[in-house]
Length: 169
Image (cartoon, rainbow, N blue to C red; front, side, top):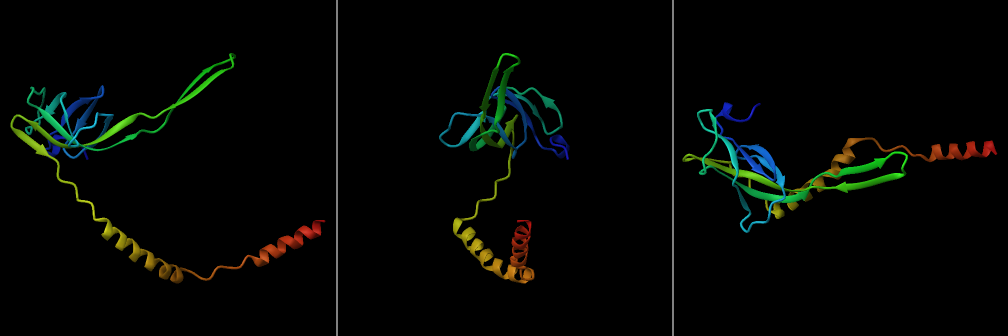
């Protein structure tokens, strides 16, 4: 299924950290590490292109605004950098993990229109999760007892191995 105006959703092309991203409200993107903000929100100033509700793409004026909520920070997968020169006994190996900031796009506003992302489902309280986990743990032994026949003993196999080793000597 495609993204964008087939479904009447506004999207924008933004620039952050030297890269361009095509975003719609609700998308989660990994951008180059951003400085921390007090309220956890970020506004992308460079909006390169924006789609309107009529299905046309245009260059935005200064009133275009894309905002997001910072979800967290992390480091990407390790990239190995290997330098090698043949016949010179030279090898150098270094690793690199690029830091990123995960951002959920919450709103795209342009020309008096504003498209917002649906609210995320609130996380369940820890007490409810703990109670559900104990209920599942109590049911687990009952399921195991019903599941199969008793396990076979390995005593015969071990006795056979001992006898075979004595015969070789």
